Each structure stands twice: as C-alpha cells, then as structure tokens.
Image: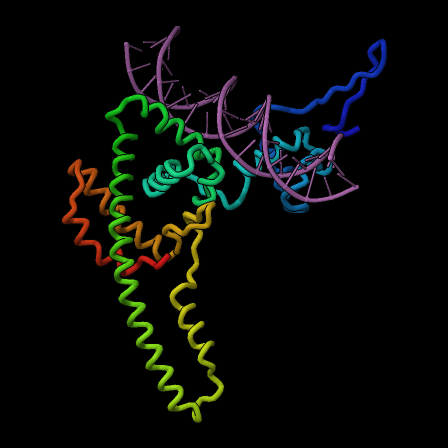
Amino acid sequence: MYWGEVMAGHMGRGVIEEQVWRKGPWTAEEDRLLVEYVRLHGEGRWNSVARLAGLKRNGKSCRLRWVNYLRPDLKRGQITSQEESIILELHTRWGNRWSTIARSLPGRTDNEIKNYWRTHFKKKAKRPSDAVEKARNRLLRKQQFHQQQQQQLQQQKAQQQLQFNFDVKGIMAFLEDNSHKAPYISQSRLVVNMHQNTTEEQGYLYSMPNGNCSASSALETSAEEVLWDGLWNIDDVHGNFSVASAASKVGLYNLVAPFC
DNA sequence: AAGTACGTCAACCGCTCCACA
DNA sequence: ATGTGGAGCGGTTGACGTACT
C-alpha cells in the first residue's frame, strides 16, 4: 500500500477508511520529490503525486506548494512600489480576486498578493489618514489624469487618422501611377500592414475580463512606470498633486501611450 | 532576561467550477 | 441530465521571528 491511498483497517464491525496525509511545513526532501515529479510528469494530475512521487501529501497540498513556492518562475523578494501601485489599482477594479490580480504581476502568486494586501492595507485601512487613503487618493488622481489624457488622445487620434487617410490616399495614388512598376502590391494588403504597425504590440498587464484594453502594451508599461514613479514621488514628497508638473510630462506620455 | 504583542507568510479548509464519462 | 474527480479560488489559521515592555 502506498501513502495517500485509502488506508483500511479492521475495527470490529467492519472496515473503516482513513486518509493519512502529512500536513504542516514541507521538508527539503518533500520539495525535492515534488520538483522531480513535476520535471518528469509536468504540472497537473496532482492527486497522482503521492503514488508516483512517494509523497505523503494530498494533491491539493502538492499543487499549493508548487504554485506558491517551488515554481521556477517565481519572483522572490519584497513587493516593489510599482507592484504595490498595480495591486492597489487592480484591487480597486476587481476587489479580492487575487488570482486575477496575480496574473498581472508575473512571478507573484495570489497567495503572496493576498497576504501582502492583508498585512499592508487591510489593517491600515481602519485608520482613515493612513497609507491606504493616500494611496487611494493617488489612484483617483491617476485615473483622473488618465481620463484627461484619453480625451487628448482621442483628439490626437482623430487628427492622426485624418493625416493617415491623407497619406494612404497619397500612397494609393502613387501606386496607381506606378502600378506598372509594382503590380504585386495589393492596396488592401498595404492598408492592413500599415494598420498592424500601429496595433501589434506585446502586452499582458491590465488585461481586463470584459475585454477592454487598459495600459496594455509592454512599451507603454515601461515608460508608464517612469512617468508614474515620477508623479508619485512628487506626491509623496509634497503631499499634493502638481498639475503643472504632470502637464509637463504629458509629452512623454503621449510618446508612449498606444491607442486602445 | 522574560513575557507579550505584533507582523509575516506558508499552509490548510471549504467551496465552486469545469470537464468528462 | 447527472454524478464524479480534478483543479482553482478566497478566507482563515497557525507557526515563527522580531520588536517592544
């Protein structure tokens, strides 16, 4: 008989069944066995771990240990201020959906974020003048700032669309004039490719369940980090938000913000 | 030095969802 | 349509370390 299977014992009237699983902190040897199991069999089928790896742990325990501690892509160390701001924003948006929030923070687990929230924000939230309130206020201002930017972007987008259409018309005319020189270029393909140049960007942060797009490109994210770090530092130092300072950085934002 | 309070985080528990037979 | 097992999720607990008295 192997651990994890039902242990049967004879107790007078008949057979009773008893699950005997190890609980509590994991040992280095158990970790080693689990890592070896995943290396050989991949993730999943957690209930087979006990049988195939010789662990005296149930499947849930094994999965949790792997997901929260042993996974090689986990990011160790303290939550950064940037990650903290993301957690705040996403919690404002989604509430206690820790796994959803964790998906936007590569290398962090839902358990880690949940613990972080409870220790750093939930208790503090009882006091109105503390970090949570300040953070939320910063977030509100950030969102307002974003709204302003969106409006400006809409205007810019409209202008650029006009310019784009103008350019396309010019190119079309050029192609028609030179169709004898480049007959293999179809107009439709040209338009598609031009469009793709503006929209094909890699991104994973802030992917929203409703399909909306919010600050989603990697390019934008890195630049946005710089921008918001700066803004938030201003806020931290002076205790209030400087619109003029923010406005001076609009140019930077406009450089990197994609059209959603 | 000893006792206590508090913070942190790994791990457990109960529930829900989903795929599949 | 229904039962079952696997997987995932959020809430909670408990052990441990550290700061404070």
